[in-house]
Image (cartoon, rainbow, N blue to C red; front, side, top):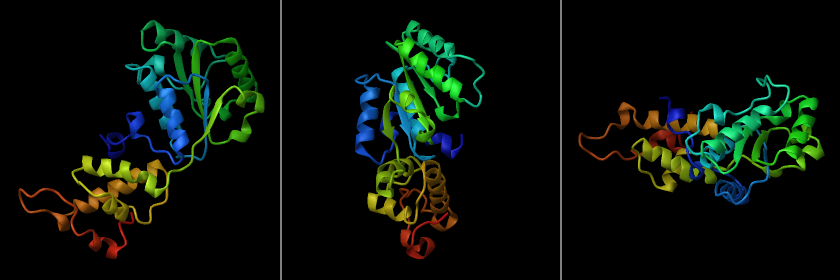
Length: 236
């Protein structure tokens, strides 16, 4: 298992958002308090697709990775209509996985205009499920389609937003650090969720290097963080 696979978000609590309102709204969807179609928009790497994936996995437990929880990617979509969505919703409810169906469409703006118009019509005609869409390009969707969704802007988290999640990942690797120590290790970091994973892997490799080997039987702790890169943190 790769470092990225080991530490990918697996629950709503693992997700990190910059805006508390976004976190609250995602939580309300996960709790079944909201069912309107959801459109997550914002820059690449802000966590939109992860949030959509985990929402459906949470709302349809036991379906992750199965045909009834297959995400739609417009670039690979072979259908000429959206009957696939109805099939997924029906299977989810018949299996008892959910009271209503849920499906993810990643990068919905990649659909041709004709398919976007069909999606709008599909939404009007079918009320038995919820569609969760992501896009990096909100301007490529027309207003009538956007109006059928609850829209949430998802931005890159700041370093301070990442601290608790980074602390959890480092603890899973055997390093129990205070938030101030984690902040030191993230000094100079500015990036998305994928970049954070790479950064933390580099931290773990550096902290596990022979220079920092602890005495036999000693509890693994963070060794002399100030010696890393001349006291300016780790810079992969």
